[in-house]
Figure 1 (cartoon, one colour):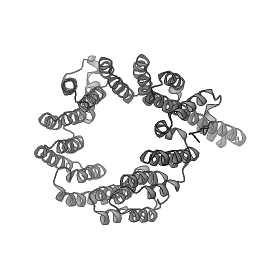
Figure 2 (cartoon, helix red, strand yellow):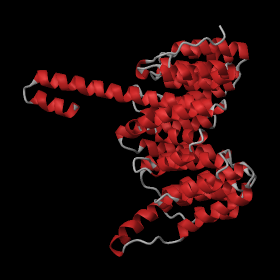
Figure 3 (cartoon, one colour):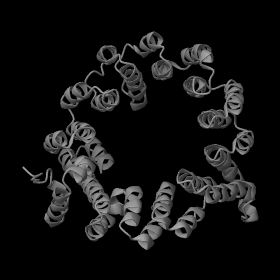
Figure 4 (cartoon, one colour):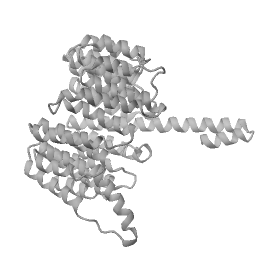
Length: 468
């Protein structure tokens, strides 16, 4: 619609163009409102499941299902369906052409959590793309390992490995095309994901062997780095250091400066984990050099990426120097890196320095960054500072979320006060988990009220007693 409005304007029909532009804006607002509506149904359904009220959960899931196709809320809906006991519907959702591959993974994991092992396995095996099939199987193996069901976890991991080594049958005329796609999926998705699963299972030999199967340099570097961290956490430090060195060797063969900065920054964060923190400084020097040699349009973002890596190992002076730019960060990735620096400073007890940095680069009042720092301050035990920061966030939904997070960390009485404040600040669905613990009857009343309201999309804030 917007494109057609532009053409009408070019054709000298400004009134028609204006009417069409208004229609486009109204349509966009309706889509956003209905997406929020679907997400609210799902959030309420999940909360009802936590409270053991599967009847209300089923009704809420049904309402969300009617909105799923137009709002793209398949991933959250699939898991909610399983938890509400609608296993068959969830399995059908996972096979819809409109659903993305991650939908099947979440449905499979939810089915496993519900004790439906065979159904979970069927959903994971149904993935057509070899990389995503391995992702799904590996996710199940991870969850089983987390539950100490190691025999079944290893069995599924072995099956995933077999997927990657067994050639698929395709028509002769399509063989070359599908073979190339399958190889990319193996290199970038399948092998790396499987290596992580074997590392989590403590099978370091298998994990290392899989990493060394990866031929593409950047894919091998990322995989070796990730597996090195996992093996170090398992106490397999010798193999972790060996893989770290392999990652470093593979990284320098990448001639793309943007890629090289990403790879080296990740290695900086990993150096201390595997026990060779003294190598971080030289890696930072190389990353900074690569960023300086990148195109002008990418330099500020890449320098910020190196700054985040420097901050992760406590090099705050370097991080501060690399964070400063002549223009305010605009790209989400650039803002994310600066936020990482501020978060690391705050976690290290230097919150005033973090605030000064954010103010200097023009992000002092950036809501998403402030919300992140609220959580960091809470982790550091600075509840009062976290509360002051949460109340200063100039974005209703993020302010509500931050207040709900603080409520979850406090006493029951304090939680109720903050919940009321959160509900008055923005999106009420962000407070549901905490509210369910503080006053489950209020949540049930909310669900009933929400279902009764005719114009759901305009419902901004429910009327909650919360015992007051």
